[in-house]
Image (cartoon, rainbow, N blue to C red; front, side, top):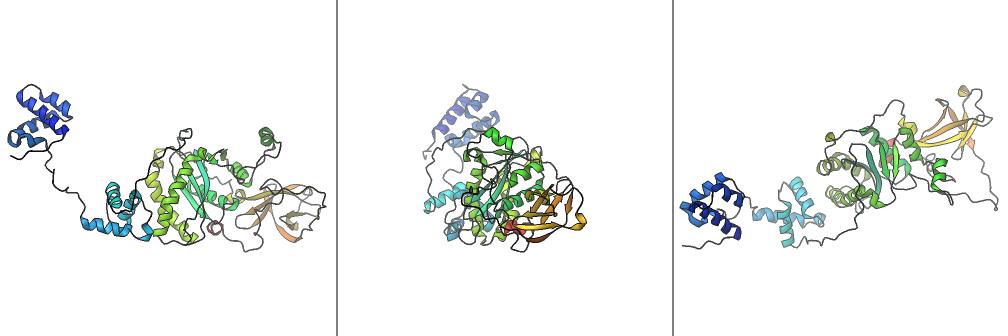
Length: 430
């Protein structure tokens, strides 16, 4: 009779079954030792009378699994993985894309073995990174939204797409973002605008200390003095008018969730865009909206329906055109004129009223390039009336600071008056 090779676990199970058969152990005791039910022990004892010791050996031992994939499937998968567009795919992402694009369903561990055997993948040595102090997630959707920009060659040289503005919910990891032409205030305002229209107003945003979000303290100025001065950037002012709080991080580790998301996107999103043959910003943003974010949120985010929604609605009193614009105050001259961005404007006679001279009004340079003058609850009709005369400074005068939003002439408006006014979303996507 052919000798059966058994593992130690199988020998132990056979020992318990024989003790049950001999009457020195109950079926319940043997079931507890074997980790099965007493009913299954009774079946094995009955089978042992016919099969002998082989009762504990699995019937498929030495036979190919019924679920084993064919050699033809393996060859087809590896042929695809050897193409240039797939050269840097890992087993997990490759398994997903083979199923999605070629209907080849292979488990990631099976594919890992195939790739290692073919020399297409090599296990990496895991290293322990410095651990930042863990911060618990917020408990509601929209309670805290992390906001940052990643500068990366997203199209691998196929087109001029470098900046991805990303917003990720702290509680659920629900993510959304846009590719923009530059990491500047107008483009970030445009992305915020679209987020607000999708979800409403979040409670707080968590950002880095970029000059878009905060004004650095002047030399010798304490934090308390800066707080009392209440200095705000254009984005800071807009968020205050929207009732959105601002939390500023002091290190990249403090924004670990969004930083890890960027690392994942720089791997997965780049490969998605490569396979889709995308080479323009317009097509890249369309891909984000229709394919990438829905798939990302389904795979990596918790269902937002399972969390309380802390977003607040946009009320009719919140005029996004006015809030999400470049705002400065100006003084009305005795001749009912004012200057803005190197241009001189005249208030039209129909809107002139007594007491306006030497009063302040709000100038709004909007994202579509339109300029508005707001005074005491209404917008005034204004018309350009001539260029401002530049004043030549003496050599002894103190040089003007060029810090962003911290004195000197802002660069925010450059180009608005020298080109046709584009619609808002053209400004974001261009």
